[in-house]
Length: 63
Length: 141
Image (cartoon, each protein chain N blue to C red):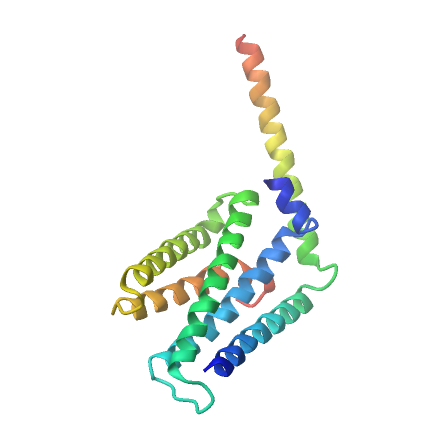
């Protein structure tokens, strides 16, 4: 039984390795998807910063 | 937490999340095969039912950790938007059903009749969660 368990766990490890290789190959080293996601995150941060500034200004005006 | 995730992923949290989610889906498919052998639905000569069930449990433990890591990355870096509602619903349901399955396994020591439908529900929700995020990112859906 130990050999069967070891074999099935090695098969799982092989599946993990294959999945990583396939998906990484699909993404590419500098994929456009990566750049797009970075741009989206950057835009989101800028929006959040602007919202925070506006909230601070509103608070100051009230005071 | 956000900085920690960014550092660990070297500024590529989305890509790391996609890879981890895809690994989880691949292991989920393998889990279906293992438990089919465990329940005697498949009878390959090279793998017995007890060994398959043991491996199913071991791989499931690792899979649960991967799913929690992906969920933490999601919650840390991404926000709820109109086009991500389906992903958030499926992901939340996935973690809830997975927690319920783990609880049932612990309480009944793996003998409950609820486990097969719970396992299938986990797999379906995992596939839907992947399809609504990583699948779209990879252009596979």
